[in-house]
Image 1 (cartoon, rainbow over the protein chains, first blue to last red):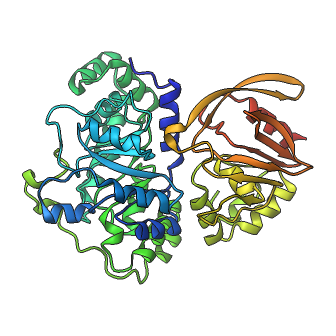
Image 2: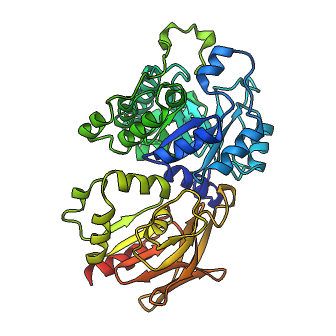
Length: 294
Length: 163
C-alpha cells in the first residue's frame, strides 16, 4: 500500500518540494560545483562525465567514483545528487551510505537490471526517476520515487523530447480528471499501478510528487519553456558546462527559470552567452542509441 | 513574489523553504534586499527553514557566504541537523495564544539556532535548541510548516496581521 503520509516519505518529497522553481546542474568537479552554487543552482548532480560525453564515448556508464562525489559534497552547501544505474540497488545503497542528498536512478547510465527498477521505499535517501509518459511516472512513484523528471533525450541539447514528454504527461493527466470511475480501473490496469494512485492523480490533476524537466535543456528560453509546460523546476545536464561561458549561462538559466513568466527578464538573460553546446537533433539518433527508451 | 514591485499592497509575507544560497542570490540580483528589510519593519513576516536563515543576523561557519537580512537577532548554523538522510518529521508541542497545540512539522536539512538575542522570544525548542523564535513582526522557524496540513502556526501568524 502506498502511504504518502508516511513520515519518512514526507521528508523525502519535502526536499523535492524545496527545489521547485530552481535549477539542478550537472557538475563533474568541485570547481564546476562552486560555479553552479555561485550562479544560484538549487542543487548539483555529481558526475564523472556529463551525458553528452557518455553518449560520445559509449561503453558501460556506471555510478561515479566516490572521490568525485565526496569532493563535490565538500565544495558546496546546496544538496548534492548522484546517479545510480536503473535497478542497481547496491549503487543506490552506496550513495546513501555516503549521504548524498538525492539519488537519480538514471537512464543516462547503462541499466543494471533489464526488468526491475530499485524498490525505493526502504531507503532514507529520496530518489528521482525519469519518465516519458504518465504510466512510467506512476510506476516509478509506486516504487517510491519522491520526484519525477522527464527523460527528454539527455546529452543532445535538443529540448524537443523533454517538451514531448511534458506535454504527453500533462495531456493524459488532464484526461484522467474527466474520466468516469470505471475508466480509471482500465487506466490502472494498462499502467500496471494501483487504482488508488490513479484515483489520486485523477482527483488532484497532478502527480503526487514534484514533476521536473530534464533532457536537452541548453538555453534560458528552453528552461522557461519547460516551466510553462508544467515543469516545476529544471535539470540542466551538458547544457551548461559544455557551453563556451558556463558561468554566464548558468546564471542566465537560473534567472530565467525563477522568472519564467517574465519575458523581459528572460530576454535580458539571452544576450552574449557565448556558444551553446553543439547538440544533436534527437530525431537523428537511432532508437537503439536513445537513452529515453531505457 | 519575485521583484520589489510585487511587495506593493501586501499585508504580510511568508518566506518558505528552499535553498537559502539560491534565494539570497536572487534577492540581490533583483534588488530585493532593502525592500524586504523595509517591508519587515512595517508588516508581519514569517520565515521557515531557508526563510529563517535569511532573516537571521549571522550565519555560523558560512562556507557559501550567505548574507542574511538581519531581521531578527539570532545566529544560525545551516544544515546543522544533518544532510537529507537525517531529515525528520516531528510532533512539536507549542504554547501559542495561551493554548497548547500539537503541531506536525518537518526538519529538512534544517538550520539550528545557535544564539538568541536578549529581545527575541523562544516559542518552541527541540532538544534544548530554539526552533521557533519571534521578535515584533518577525517570526522564524527552523522547520517547515508548509508541508503539512496543520494550520496552527498559520493561524498564529494571521493574528499578527490582524493585530
